[in-house]
Image (cartoon, rainbow, N blue to C red; front, side, top):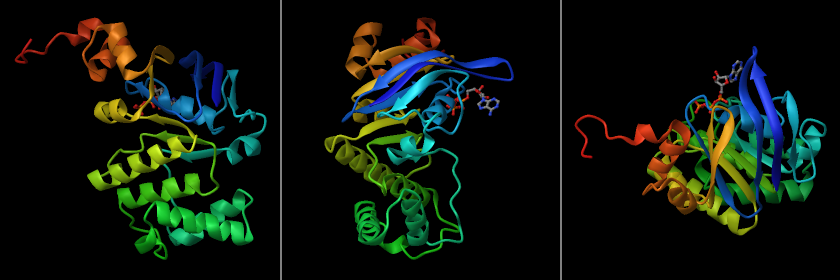
Length: 250
Ligand SMILES: Nc1ncnc2c1ncn2[C@@H]1O[C@H](COP(=O)(O)OP(=O)(O)OP(=O)(O)O)[C@@H](O)[C@H]1O
């Protein structure tokens, strides 16, 4: 379980996260939705221990990333939205280095590498240097890196951005398999059909606060809207934004 308790964060005196609290249960896929600038990435970076909150506390399992970064990192896999890869390394070398940093060695390391190679269909990329990798290839490597140490918790910031259909399907299949195995999954996205299809629970964020949470169906009932996109607009921007644009059918 991931628990966020009363987190606040400001940049240069401007509040970005305001007394934010929520829980992410095990064995479920939770989506974090919010407008551009709502604070999703800042929130995820705090959960991962990459950014320090001004106030409040996070628990990843039993570990607080601010006080016990190594303990939290062992239980966390992270797929960020703007990360770089070490382009001179082959995929195998890169994943082996990360797995070693997580304390894996010997036959355990070899088995972990083989497992992500098979699961993420990395055979043809395995011994290639990563320079020039396409967006989809980079996503596969990022996901493999996040999963190589079999973490209980997985955090993904806009994981499908720029991916083609097959890459999205592979990601979706992987997330569903991890959910079935009990993994705690939190991802941010702007793609409503994907969120509606994949997530058990949705958190809607606006101006650094949670303004709605529940299953997509619960959010529809709460807002009286037919679909997740309209529910999101009503919660995040206000119902007046649901009025049809000029030229659109009412
Ligand atoms: N390091 C920083 N320094 C100053 N301001 C920052 C910093 N990081 C984020 N911000 C600001 O905090 C606000 C929230 O940004 P954040 O990236 O968390 O939003 P987001 O919901 O992930 O947005 P998007 O959907 O556009 O990626 C924005 O106004 C952003 O400009």
